Every structure is written in structure tokens, then in C-alpha cells.
Amino acid sequence: MAVVLVAGGTGFIGSRIVRRLAADGHRVIVMSRDPGRARGKVPEGVEIRAGDTTDEASLGPALAGAEVVVNTVQFPNHPVENPRRGYTYIRVDGEGTVRLVGAARRAGVQRFIYLSGAGTREGQTKPWFIAKLMAEKAIRESGIPYTIFRPSWVYGPEDRSLNKFATFARMLPFVPVIGSGRTRVQPLYVGDLAEAVAASLRTESAINQIYEIGGPQEVTMDEIIRTMLRVMGRRKPLLHSPAWLMKLAAWPLQFLPAPPLSPGSVDFVLMEEPVDNTLVLRDLGLTLTSLEQGLSYLR
Image (cartoon, rainbow, N blue to C red; front, side):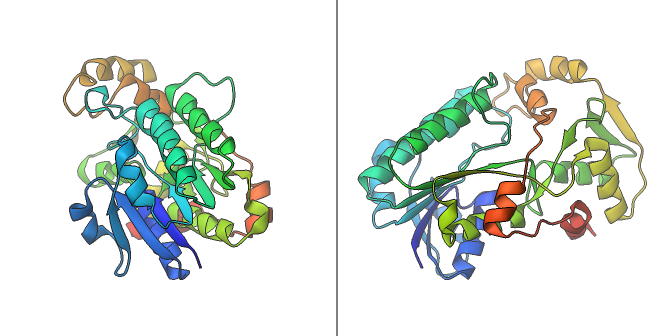
């Protein structure tokens, strides 16, 4: 078993990975900007260290003794950027990962696992892709054996995306949907992503590999919400708002101290990036969770 440091280990995805790695017997360390608040969010026996990918000086002490680094860091209220507070894709996903990779190399880390994003490839122009490519390039050129995952839309009991629709279904006479509802995605259950990370640590063929990973079904947003409503035992109409109108409405909101929406986040929500699971299923032996099964926590 390895000493594994999880950056972002108190977040939605990171906390699930922490629990999965601890269950496998790894010695898990969570790196957090706020160790005091992190204590109640991690399992018993997990060590917490102060560290921030935007503060290079904090990374050396945080990584001391770590053999593996898993980077799951996202900025708060993702995907809505907040430049005033430094919460941008470039600063957190891009430059933050570059700093973490440099610190990992200096600390003698033997493996680096990174959660990138579906659709990351050369030629993409959106800021989230530019940042993810910056991060991937730093990892590939670091000399540290790596595994990179490019997950599609990840959902689960603690996510702040799909669960918003569940809240709308409970509170409103309809469920609002941005755009036509025909955007196609492959929603990935968070437990499956955590299992993939755990499996990559015991699979030699996963070293220096980049894996696309998404759910087993390619479905539209309308189909996702209707599945959610069926699981919840509710019947509500869907109310679609044109993307251009939502971007127009979001424009002034982005200047608030804590913006709830931005034009860029509308683009992010409407992104279509299908993934091919062939390689990850072959190498890691995963069984992917169906959407209805994954949403069973809403019953």
C-alpha cells in the first residue's frame, strides 16, 4: 500500500476518492486550504495537511513523504469562475496543477494521478480546456509516472449540479432546463470514478496512460431529468430557456461578489463531449453504474 496525498480531498469527487483509497488500505493524506474545516469531512485515520495549489510555499511541507499525488482540486462554485477571488480555470486548474507537479517532482513523488476533463485536446479554445491542457502537459513532461482521467459530467449524492434539478423538482411546479434539453452527455457516477482511480494504482498498464471515462449511457439533458423525476416518484413539466437568453441574464450576475451564473458556465453546461470507455474498461475492469441506479440516492 502507498502513501497517497489527495489534493482537493474534501470536495465532492475528492472525498469519495479518499474514502475509496482508505478502504483499500492506503495511508491517505488530504491536502486542504482549511485543515480545521476539513476534519469533519474525512474518515477517521486520514491525515490532514495544510496546502494550497495557488501557494507554492505551502506545497513542499504538504507533500513530504507522499508516494502518490491525486489532484482533484476544483475552485468553489465550479463551473462559475470568480476572477475577483482568483477562482478561474487558468489559475486553479492550470497554474495550480503546474505548481503541484513541480512540488511533487521535488518531493520525489512516484506517481501522479490527475482528473482532467472530457474533450480535453489540442485546438480547444474554451478556458477550461486551455487550463486542463496546461496541466496535462506539465504532468506528461515532469518525468513522474502518471495516470490522467478525462471524466464526463460526474454526479452523485453530494454534487451541486444534477442535485440542483432535484431541488427544483421538490420546490417548483416545473423543472427549468438551460437550452433545448437535447444536449447529449454521459453522466458518470462518482463511485465509478473513485473506483477507476483506486484500480489505476494497482494496474501497471495504467502507468503513463490517459483514460476517457463516462457513464454507460449517452443521454440528453431532458432524459437525465426525466430519469431523475421517475426515481423521485414525481411528475413535473420541463421548462426550457434558450441559451442566448440565459447568457444575457448571466452577464450582469458575473460581476457579483459570489456570482451564481456566468455566460461561460452556460457554455460549460451545454458542452457536448462524448467519451470512449473502451480503454478504461479494458485496463481497469470497471463495471459502470447505470443512470437510474446511480440516482437511487434520490428515492
